[in-house]
Image (cartoon, rainbow, N blue to C red; front, side):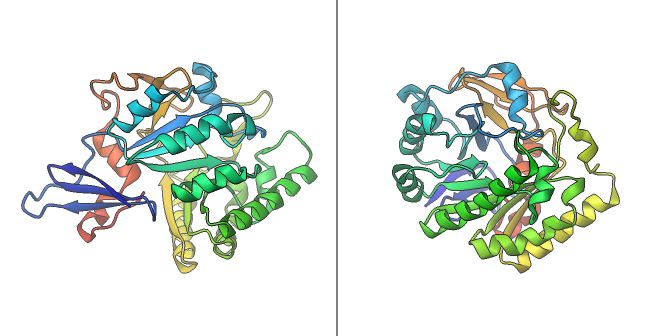
Length: 329
């Protein structure tokens, strides 16, 4: 299904089947596509998680409240009438069994919205939930950082020993393969850091073999640090010549493997809108670890008070591709 928004420069479309944006500019106006209204809403279903990733950005959100989201009919109505085209259900871990009921209510209640569900890939959804994911063509995005389990261990994805992390990594691969075989639309997202710079290129072939055709890659961004552990030592700075070269190489190997790769780059001020459990909407300013309160869902006069429309546009679809009718998502 195609959902669309009419803009003065043309039409912005999102293919909910392929999970991809397209821009169709009106040749008469000659105006470049831009975001007059926000595009993507990240919904924090819960901040609880069965893992303990040191670099998890949910640590930032916990500073502004850790209450689980109450999925009411009013909340669903407000999301449905909002200008967002894509709803990303995230956490914490939204596939925790205790949150299945509100998750199902959200997936079943959303209308004319594309749905993306983020997961760490360690919990198999119930048959009922799998059926809902397939019916609504929800993109289940699994966190997978490397073709080698030892490169994920360096970021302390679990509280346990290395052997436990290796077991979890292999379990992720098995889960992705099984869900893809059940018709679930699977995507992957990776965090690029110093320890996986070489092995991450091998992940493209592994994803292809698993049936994954959508891959998001982003640079490790500082977050609230765990006691006695500083993830900043793993960061590749954008000014590092290896950063741009590797970004280009990742896109190349992904395309060769038949995978569409979206490179998020260093967009710290990335104009993401975040719905917290108490119903407040935040956005991400330039400084990592901070959030700016924008307002309540359904009661916001100007979503772009604190963020740039141009940056928001660049974050979600590429202006350079607009004349060819294609865009990034």
